[in-house]
Image (tube, rainbow, N blue to C red; front, top):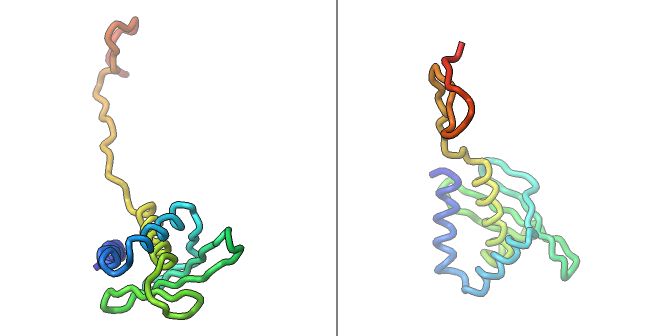
Length: 128
């Protein structure tokens, strides 16, 4: 599985595992831009969460093992999934989405004649 598929599968698991309130608070943290990726590797993402209300910064790591499980740790302690780790998962998903290749758009192909607009005063002529 690629990382995007792993994240989608983890989000589905969390919908059944976490309370709706925790998921909503995680989305709020993410939508407010409080998560930031510091570093990433093939099997690990390190992020920080900036809590403006408490004036504190929390470190979060998302480790991906060989069996495609994501394990979060907050401030170097494995506390399981909560709103902060869920917000970090959403941030990683968002960053990966921005890096993924976009749909290929075909470029307009020109022929031997210039394009003429209806009711224009230009005369269509053959290109040199």
